Image 1: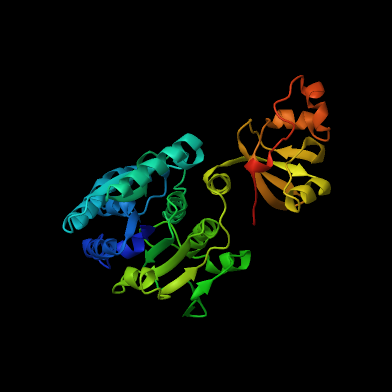
Image 2: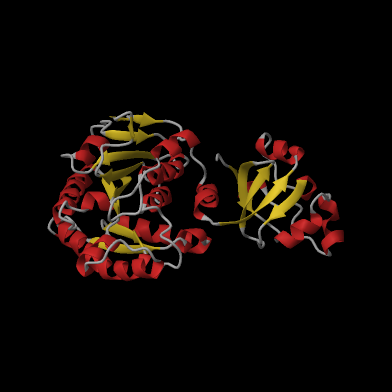
Length: 358
């Protein structure tokens, strides 16, 4: 069985009359039902809760967190009911999963979510996933669920993430870019644009999400969900029916979590010797090569590693920022003398360290 994540954007779900389209939801559910017979297993990441709340209450697009929470709490059961009915007509059971960034940041929650999703898939149920906007304490973090869909794809080892939207793909010079192998700053800047009247994302957020799929061994396709048999054309016929973004490498699951699942709490600045040892030789970060710190972090937090102005790695730190400041520039053998104790000779062990591209 091959795992697939389908992300459905608010722009696709919203009709010209400002309603959430049950017809579009029904179309996607039908395609999923047909493809399940070809050994595909699907998870759906669905936007639209805030949009449903806006429509139900006659409210404008929210400008505050509390207003977004209110609209999501009204709209989420409406949206979920549409998916339950659409899958139910095809004799498929749907399960609701509401996620927060904390579910990905904390290792125990991260692993528990993965077990839950895989169990749901094993039972032949389709999980319908959304961010838990009704209780979020910060701005909506996942970029109109694009980032969330990429994290879910990485989480369950999906071969494909299909982002269905109301455009044919990434446009350049008025034409669809058929494929992308590398996502650089220039491409991200050219893709920056406005979101829909009901959504929060845009093409840039989709490319940022693709940076996650690229290191997860997952192919991502941005396509027009209004087109007939779009999922079959992408997954079975292997048609390039939009913009396809190919994987670049596949990191181990734990290292993917370090790069994208965790929130960075600070930074450690290193000298040239430490940079070369980590970047070129795959070594651990030792105190001798550290020249400074930034931010407040504790043992077990994730921090960026910076040489000059270049952010080149990220890892889980074994000491707090105060402790690192005391031992920076020292030999590992002197840690106990400086601090009065020693946990490990490495500030960040190479098993908990990942090279990153900015």
